[in-house]
Image: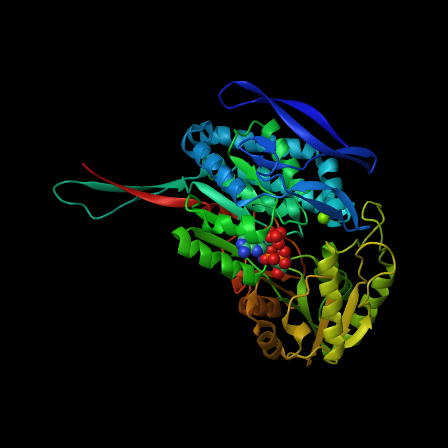
Length: 517
Ligand code: NAP
Ligand code: MG
């Protein structure tokens, strides 16, 4: 089942070396996928130290795609040592920033050349609808690398007028330096895009990294590793370790040679990571955590747009979307019309094989997640919310769930407070004209990732966007993220931004140099 391939590689120091990759192959979507499945350490694909493996699953039918190496603590230590050596002694650290940028542009070009293969792998490993995987999961990943490649030679300090030690003169200037070895730990909802959001900024800043993809979706990260070799990124700069959070992720949090950990995932694990990072060596952390983002729809909205975007705010990527609207507040005067139009549109959604170009809604990412979602809906019913449609598993193989709508959701209910991370619309009414009342309810959560408002009244839009306590506010749109715009949460949705100029600062430290002359 595995074939051997040889890829010529040009190293930073002009010495050519053969990279041997043992691929898992699969004929699917009119192409032959060639998927690396081993740990990627110091520029080489190799088995985990103890040769352990596990199976990665296709959620469309529950079948095994291939086996994947299951990294151990020893593999983490080897990867960190390689990243440290690459940072301290390798060509990466000595390279001109502009040359570093060229390598990242090259990597983005290679990702684009392989976009169909990457999107297909993403689709079978995570259940992402292929058309969406191509545009968002892979498309935005490419854009992210291009965006940050452009930053490499624009990372500048300041000259600062300080008090002079007369008769002498003084000048302070600042330099922005990379942190060293960084760890990145990511979830399974956008496997390649989460990698890109963090790795691109991290690499542009000049760091080296060790990344752990989610156990259930390791394949695009490993394909990315292969492309990074082809792009000429020196060995040890990027290391990818498939494996468990409890072991690999925990060791990364504890490791004394790592200076920063970038994490996207759940709030409880984020807290655990921050604690470990503090106790071990006070490594810097940034945390993109859970959300329960409110979307407020006023009676004076553009109804067609509110219906369309209200739906995508919930059902985009089968609801496995960190900024998904976790709660919709709809003004009483349009509530019933809004719901009936949403239900009409849901009937038109095509549920099916994510590789089919006409599919709108694919399977949930993995079995345990589907089970959690079905339980979530049962709790909603028990608490007395009205199930308007959905709430069940689709009667077909794989892990499909019906797009679901709950109305009459009251503030104290579990489904009003807890994130589902699935295709579940949670709707509450608010009294006509009660702007402050709905704002109070929208902010009454420990999360603060995203939020949205639909209204044609610019004054109301500005007022609401000022008062919503969330890192992102969408006005008359939703899910409109862009590589140039900072992304990240408030409160227990974490801190530290991905994307935009702000993301670079997460991976830099400032040195002040003071001169007397
Ligand atoms: P999770 O359980 O927190 O897992 C995320 C990652 O952390 C996985 O790679 C996981 O490994 C790893 N991990 C688990 N335990 C760890 C430990 N002790 N130390 C270090 N790493 C550890 O999250 P999830 O349930 O898979 O993902 C869904 C959550 O992510 C949702 O709550 C969602 O809101 C959040 N999310 C947030 C954003 C954002 O940008 N704010 C984006 C996407 C998702 P395993 O693979 O072994 O589980
Ligand atoms: Mg999978």
